[in-house]
Length: 344
Ligand SMILES: C[S@@+](CC[C@H](N)C(=O)[O-])C[C@H]1O[C@@H](n2cnc3c(N)ncnc32)[C@H](O)[C@@H]1O
Image 1 (tube, protein in one colour):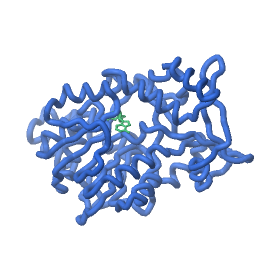
Image 2 (cartoon, helix red, strand yellow):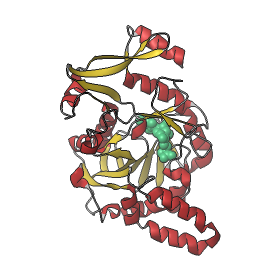
Image 3 (tube, rainbow, N blue to C red):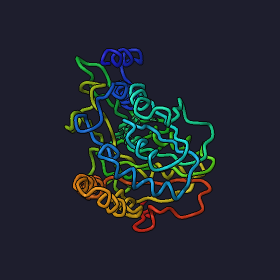
Image 4 (spheres, rainbow, N blue to C red):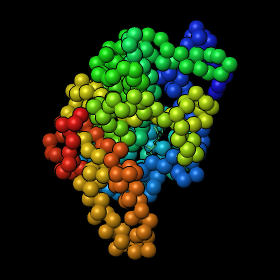
């Protein structure tokens, strides 16, 4: 991977934007088989904890009664596995990682249909859990002399180099009010993805679930070093240039930017809430009570799962749910209380 990146930097005249580096590194990372997910892997996502997340989300989906579900970036296939037991509808998966797709196919068999690209038109429910945080981001530095884009250059090893920002990146960066000096990310790829998805959704709802903030919190004066993080074997660190392709690289999601892009594509913003509030509104406590009735011995692990999903110190507050839609008339169950659209 390192050689491939060095060759691309050299061919580009000695510098590539960080976003391109992140794209290449993550392609290699998600192309690897069976590495990332679960307690032995690099990180654990909500569907990997057990079935509680999926069973609770299913209550929201059942209320929408979709003909089709399209899951983007299905990871190990855990969420699809749970939802398919709860719901009776067509299930489509779009997965960009070749090895992950093979793993999903093995687990889910003919219960799902794999797509190679976003459909040109879609009706139903789209789910993207921890997908947008894996999309490439541009790195930006605001300083006295102007706005700079951080990129990757060649020294003995890969090294950082800044250039004056230009084009759409500069335009977006200028619209963000931060005290200088300040470094952060701008997710141009995530916004473009949302616009395309929005244009292609003829009718239905998109749920984006991920860690992140509204714009005011994201570009807070105290977050002057941004949110970029690397994960390997449950260890987090801040240097994405070491061992490209061997570690996960992520950035938190700017949910205000996604909502804005969705509106540009003509979608309605249907709800924005913390994961904890969303799951409580969907009836996670009823799902827990049901689990206790079914098998009291299994209650303790499920209660521990609920703790991880809901606790403000774990996933409850940092993770948010953003729902977007077209032609959706009824209010969504998951936002019946504690909805925070006004903060976007
Ligand atoms: C952090 S994992 C989350 C997996 C799963 N959703 C979960 O919650 O366990 C990110 C997933 O998104 C996929 N991915 C990244 N960019 C994507 C895109 N543009 N479209 C579809 N999948 C994408 C990756 O291959 C990977 O499966």
